[in-house]
Image (cartoon, rainbow, N blue to C red; front, side, top):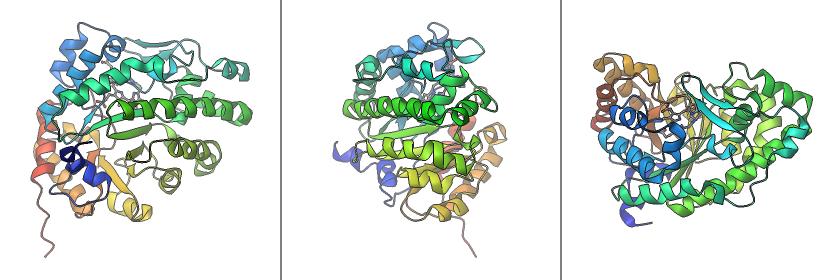
Length: 349
Ligand SMILES: Cc1c2[nH]c(c1CCC(=O)O)Cc1[nH]c(c(CCC(=O)O)c1C)Cc1[nH]c(c(CCC(=O)O)c1C)Cc1[nH]c(c(C)c1CCC(=O)O)C2
């Protein structure tokens, strides 16, 4: 890695070093709220876009440049890895992701393929290399994957869900088959993430978007050992952001599972949560994505409130608590990024 990249404010924050201003990027920064993205999507399907390294590069780089953020995130999806494992994935119009052959029994788990090598997802690594060479030298590229629990939820439910009753029933009824499924997901995800690093990603984010649905007791039993093995298998030189939503009761357990930076959503206070997590990890977050629909002065006020809570402590990466919503006004997003970059601490007297 070159020195400009190593000394970027984003990578400094990942190492818990002080920065000139707080680095900021936004989950789903490349997405439907942006007209450039919608124009491309009018011509190609979402999966075609993910599988075309040239178009994935265009979408990633355009979003990072238009917003002026401090990091780019690979354009892909957490569910792509399920295809080479034998699941039939479709992004149905207006419905979100659908898996046509979900895992419902222990025999279904046996049919899930072990990924022996990372090559089925070569199109992703080609996109990583191409994005890295197209980005300015001071802008790190974030690679990512879904966490095994969130991927297992999709694999078992066959799509999105409100209560995850199928996934949880599976977990409680057949813990052995659950562990077998999680082991396959951990093995595949480890290969996948390390291959993204080898292709040119400087940082990784693991999305455990739906894990906040579990009690701490069940997290400890059904998720934590698998997450530990995943973190242990990753390239130790690459910082990892460990993200979830609705995880107010799981933060310490998530930290114990692994990661350099813990994602916080807007349901928790940034300062209190960081104190709970302790000095060895940084935090990412935590503006409510819905706040981007508020008048700009209110966005600015709450952005400053979050930065006041971080109080200049090294290791804060500004972000939303979850992804940008599709109807968000772009100028509000740009105003948010500008506010983070121009922030001066509020005098305390
Ligand atoms: C759960 C999850 C998924 N995908 C992802 C997660 C974890 C983050 C989270 O909790 O939101 C992760 C993801 N998905 C996408 C990215 C690209 C990078 C970025 O953040 O800009 C990333 C990091 C693109 C996408 N992934 C998807 C889109 C929209 C597709 C379109 O163009 O129609 C994008 C830009 C589709 C997708 N993909 C997924 C769903 C549920 C949906 C449908 C809902 C929706 O449409 O927003 C699964």
